[in-house]
Image 1 (cartoon, each protein chain N blue to C red):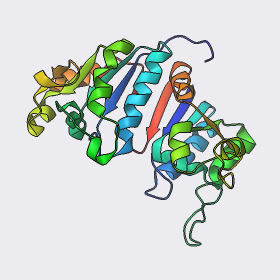
Image 2 (cartoon, chains in turn brown, cyan):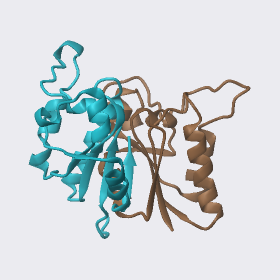
Image 3 (cartoon, one colour):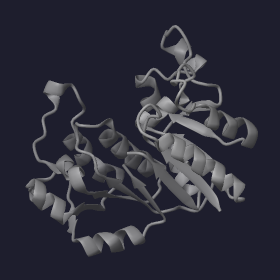
Length: 130
Length: 123
C-alpha cells in the first residue's frame, strides 16, 4: 500500500515526530511504500540541521535523515511554514538575504501543492500531531 | 502534480482562529487542494467552530482575518462546509451569521460523513 505522512508538530515538543519516523520505518519494514512525508506548520522544525538535543534524549533528526538517505523517502517542508520559522535551504537563505541555511539537506522546501499531490497519489495519508 | 485519480478529502478543523497557526494552515491546505482541482470539503469541530464567529476583527493582533478567508471559500468552489452542531451550541456560535454557509451535523451524521471520504486531514 502507498502511504504519505503529514507531520504538524515540532520535534521539540512532545513525541509526535518520533512516532511518525518510527511509523515510517515500520511501513517500509512491512513492505509498504512511502510516497512522501510532508511537514507543515510547527512540523517544519523537524528539518532543523542546527537543533541540538539533550544528551539524555534521543536525536529526532537522525531517523529522518536515515529514511531519506537509505530508503529515498521524500521529505518536504512547507515553504510558508518553514520560512517564518527560519527553516531555510541555501537558495532561500540567499533569496531573503539571511546569513546561513538552517535545514538538513535530506529535506526539501516546497509548496502545499506537494501535500495535495500526496493525497491524490496515496492510498493512506496519516497525520501526526496537531 | 503527477497524474492520478482524484481522491476526496475532508479537512477536519479543530483549532480556534487566532490561538494557533494551524487554523490558517488548515484553510491554506483547503485552498491549495481546490487550486489543484481536488475535491475538498471542510468540517469544523471543537474549538474550530470559533472560526465561524461573525464580524471577526483581527487588526489589533496583526493577523489575517480568518472570517474574510472563510468567506472566500465559495470563490474556490469549496461549497460543502460542515459543522459539529453540538460544538456550535456549546460555544454559542450563531451559525446563521457565519462568514460562510455551513451545514450543522449531529454526532452520528459526522461519523457517516467521515466514512465517506478517501482521506481525512485533521488539524
